[in-house]
Image (cartoon, rainbow, N blue to C red; front, side, top):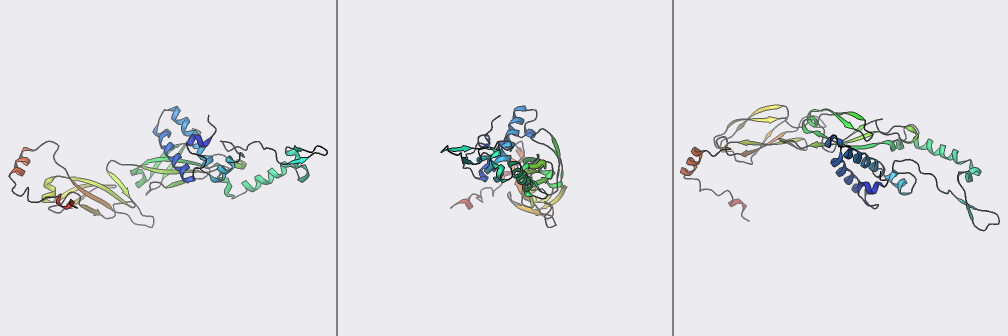
Length: 302
C-alpha cells in the first residue's frame, strides 16, 4: 500500500485545500463501491483514497503529517531527538531520547498532559477520527426522503437517512460513526450527498424543471395535457398557439423550502413531431399558404 497521501490523491505538496477536496471528490466518484459493485480493486482503491483524504483534508493533520509527526494512517510517529546537551569534555552534542526529559518531569507526563488537552470532553480535536465520504442518491429520494446503505472504508455498512428536500452538495453528519480518534474517542462520518441526474426532472434551487413534449396539434389548438410532477401527474391547460420553448409555472410543485413552503415546477414546452412520417400532415403543410410567411430565424440576425 502506498504511504504518501499526496501521491494517492495526485496533488502536489503545495496544493490548496480546495485542490485536495476537488481531487478527492473526483476519485471518490470513480472508485466508490456503490458504483463498482463486486470490484475488489476499486474498493481497495477507495479505501486508500479515503485514508489519504483523512490526512490531507484536515489542515491540522496535514501539517502534522508534513512535519513527520503522524503517518499515513494518522498514527503517531516515533519521536525523533528532542534536544541535545553537550557532554562534559566532549566538545560535541550528545542526543538524548525521552529519558533526556527526566529533569522536567518525564516524557510520559508531558505526553499524558498533551493527550488530556487533545481529547478532553467537548474538545473539537475529537474530530481527528472523522471520515469524509461522498454518497450519490436518486433525485426522488433527495426530494421525498429515504434510506440508503453506505459502505465505509473498513468494509462495514451504515444506513443513512436522507432527509426530504436534500440539496446537491449537502453534508450529513453521523455522530460517533467514524474512526477511533485520539484517546479512543470515535469521530463522525461526514457524508456529502450528490444528487444523481434524473431522466425527466432537474433541480434549480427550490424549483424543479421539466421539459414537456407536446404535439403540433396541441401547440396550435391548445387543450389539456398531463404533466408529471414529483407527487404524481397533474393537468395543465395550454393556450392555443403555444410556442416550443414557452415556460409555464406550476406553483408549489417544487422542493420543500428551508423556511417553509414549496418551490415551483417550471414546465418548458417542446413541440415533437410524430415518430413516423404522417402523409396527411405532410400534405396539409404543403397546401398551407402561410408556411413561408414567417421566418423564425430572423430574430437571430445580429
